[in-house]
Length: 369
Ligand SMILES: [Fe+2]
Ligand SMILES: [Fe+2]
Image (cartoon, rainbow, N blue to C red; front, top):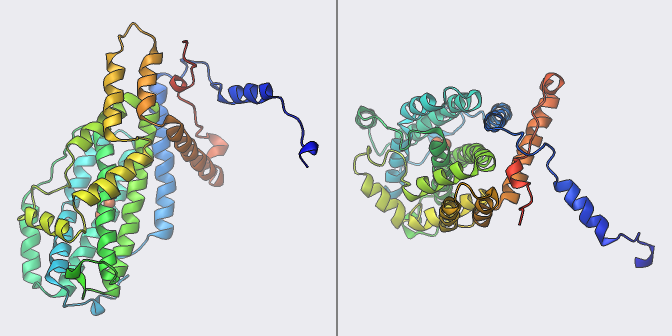
């Protein structure tokens, strides 16, 4: 059998491999402005794809999509307090939208996405409102008053620049998704913590499932965006990633009354604590961003800065390459542009102007050494 295979000289393989990796544009042609344009085109294309998918697959309603009359009224105090906590965090949606919009308003893709994102987050606020309301462990008057108390305060951005906020939202959306998925396990009756042994509730399970799918979609959007920046502006993006992770806190923790109690409850019942944050949020997101570990990214940044400006870029790149898997980042960015290309061909955009991937030549120049 082997005799019939065509014989390929190793040199041919090497030559074709080198050819396939050759920059498709002359080195230096992708300017700073062009990189920005590529990032923006990526965001616009992703946003268009996202809206269509959102309308087709996640067009649920917080009032009519759930059998609220059959929602349980005898949940454990733990489940009731956790849901009130989720309700509280989602109450700041007007602030989340307005403050984020202000810093991304010049970007078509990012600003329109934030509007769409806001329209999904307001449904989350109303879904948790309904869970508290129909749970009937609090009176409707208590609920109105609590909402009033929460909204007296205004949420402020933890970071003022769009790039830091992009990375913040990657980790925040993933953390929110994990919170809802774990409460979903409680509602399905499969969570192992004994406080939840009598909390099975199909209506709550469906609410958790639907909302967690939304959060996964949000996470994916921000993740794709973060990878665009990592690919075209690696050092700035890595710096933002490190800063955000070093100071990360869930939104509105400083605004919600008795937030420490809620955090302690989430931690104690393993819905969401330090372990879940490290294992299910940071580790997963870093891996999908091509980062080995936070410390490795910090190391790479530090070493790239130690290289004198007059030196070649090769050493800076090597320091960065060591900490981030740019092969993975590039593969994912290429896949994103392919997805955008398919969408644009399907809907006629590509007949007039096609969004095309262009490599970041910084990563294609062979090291002179
Ligand atoms: Fe949400
Ligand atoms: Fe979200």
